[in-house]
Structure formats: C-alpha cells, structure tokens
Image (cartoon, rainbow, N blue to C red; front, top):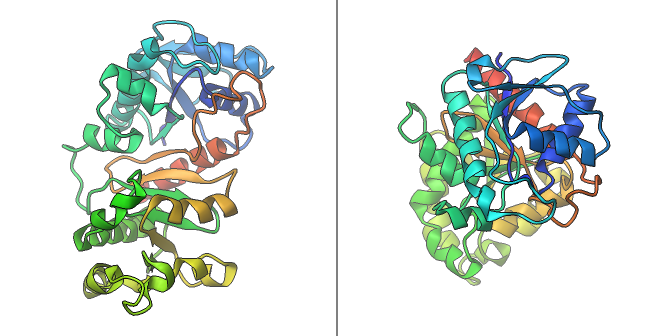
Length: 335
C-alpha cells in the first residue's frame, strides 16, 4: 500500500511535535509522509530534542514513498515562521492548503489515507475558511467523488473498547433536540453500520442508541423525544436489516458489561459521547470521519497551544490515528 499522508495542522501547536516524535522513533508506526512545511517540521524536531531529521522535499504526492532514512515532505510553505503557542493568522492559508493537498493525495492514489494533525478553527476563519472544522471541509472536498454507500460525514470517536458516533457534533446543547430528526438518526445509523462492516471488519454490527432524556424519557414522563423521534428512527433502521436498539439510558450504557453487547454507539449530542470515550481512552482515542470515499483519521485532541514548544506532548493518540488509518485503508483495499 501507499504511505499515509499527514497534514501539518497548526504549526504553532503540538501537531508537528507529535509527528516529529513518531518519525524519530518510527518503530511500529505505519509509513507516512508529511504535507506541510519541511522547515517547520525540522524546528519541531529540535524542540522535542529529536535528532535532526533527513527530509526529502517533493512537489507531487506520487513522488512520496516510504523510506527508512528520510521523511518525504509534500511542500506547503508557511508564510511566516511559527511561534509555539501563538497561532498566526498569516499562516491560515498554508494550513488549509495542506489539508487540500492531503485529500488530493488520497483521491489520486498517492496516499492510502489521510491523517490530519490538529487545527485551530478560529484561526482558519480569518482566512474565510467557511467550515466548522476538518470533518465538514473534507466532506466538501470529496462530495463529487463516487461513493456507493450512505454518504457522511459522521464523526466517530474510536478506542480499543468503545466506538461512539455523534448524531450532532458542535451543536449548542439548547439546539440539539431540534437537530435530532428521525432522518438524521437514520442516516447516522446507516453510516455507522456500513463503516463497522467495511472499515472495522464487523460482519453483523450491533448498534446501541442513546436516549436524549434521563432514563431515556421514562415512557414519556421525562420527555417525548424517544417516543416521537428516536425509537421510530431505530425501528426504521431495523426494518432495513440493522441490529439497533431502541433508546437506552446513557447513564447505564458505557460500563464494561454493557459494552459487550454492542459494537458501536450512537450518541445524540457532543458530551454524551465524548465523556465516556475520553474517560476510557483519554490518551489514545481517534477521531474518524465516516461515510466518505477516503479514509481520514485524526488525534482526538486539539492544538495544545498551552504546551506547544515544551516537548511534553504525548503522541499516543497520533500513533493510534496512524495505526487505525492504515488498518481501515488496508480493509478497503481488500474489498
């Protein structure tokens, strides 16, 4: 398989330091090349005390190959040298371009999958980015590509013992109930079920569906969303052949015994899904975009501006993102 493409994220954050650490150690990591500024990567290596890296700068993804001695870098230059912990809007366009070229590398067959290092959305909006984040932007870049299954994007947070898909993502809590339509839940269920089969090798996926209200509404005594929207969505998914539960009380859904009963969960709002995944997999969870014609993963954390340049950022989640992207791409290549 072709190596993974890794987009540089915000160079003022910890992303390039994570990539530099994994590249310096390399043992067990899938092959990858960087899409970004080679000088910024070299500076990140110095900040973490890693040996000066050997870099091979290329201008086409097709020229990037897995090499033992040198890291290929698909050149996307910064407008100005980064200052750790202080994101500079002047570099916003380079960060956007790195994502675009990373996506194009996968679409053209020059890379097996894309792993994105963290970005600061507020900084990108200074360049008229126009998207809430990576997930929606990558969906936009691939929206005209052929895709036979239900199209996302759907955000999945994945760890070794838990996989949680979000029916709403960065929606204010007060607006989440209105955003939870039957159609939206059905779509997320289809995307999750197909991804569990295609990308995670689960032949007969079992999906647990969270309720919105305490005790999943208590038969309508603590809210009617379960009766009017959530359970009808589950029934429609079951009519299509998916194994999906009715709304279940989220407070009893994530303990060890409960997790043995399903392969993936649909959480209805951000913290309902993020709290359990980060409790169980704070260091090694992976953000995965489902329902797209390319494989995309990311570390499940932000830019870490507060610790950038200090050499203390842990690379566990980035390692896990590389590993999962490689495994998903490998399964798709065999399909």
